[in-house]
Length: 98
Image 1 (cartoon, rainbow, N blue to C red):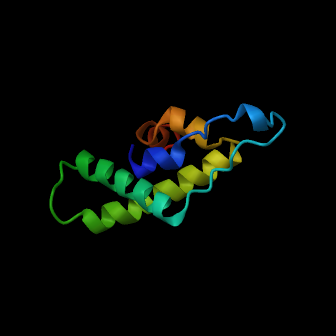
Image 2: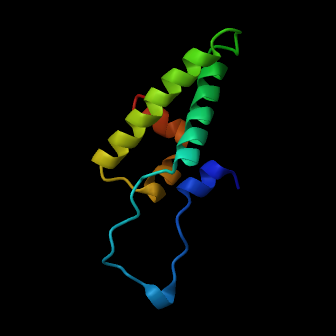
Image 3: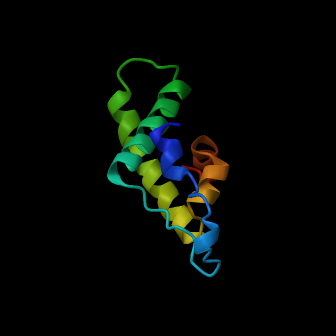
């Protein structure tokens, strides 16, 4: 399981500590998790431009903007880690127009 999948993974339910009234886990990735999300998004951007040389920095900066916009939109919509994990990062970027 990659760090990205771990960051989006839903924690296992503990029947002894079932807290059905607890709010869902907030969508607040750690700095390394956010960095990996940006790296994945930058890869998709590079893939879209057929990995032409000279665009890596622009891909990274755009990916950073996209991930921040995606996370802000997901938070505003009330999505948690589980919902974003179900959507998947690539689909989430498309869905949120990032």
